[in-house]
Image (cartoon, rainbow, N blue to C red):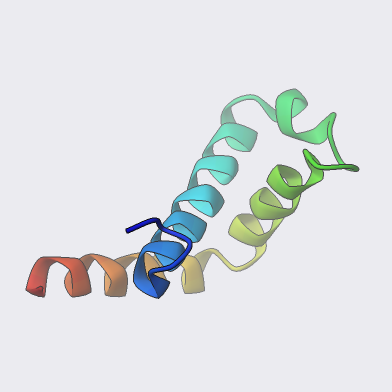
Length: 71
């Protein structure tokens, strides 16, 4: 099945996107900050979510990992 039709896979893709964008912005800020509008603004927005809500994103990643391991 595609990740778009499976809710758990969709959440996993969103969490990975947020974590990846946050890491890329920490390492190379010009790559993410240069695209604040348009379609590529999704990556900037994901990086901002990862920075501002990092404890909640980390808890969500841990919960997702436990869920995947217990299946």
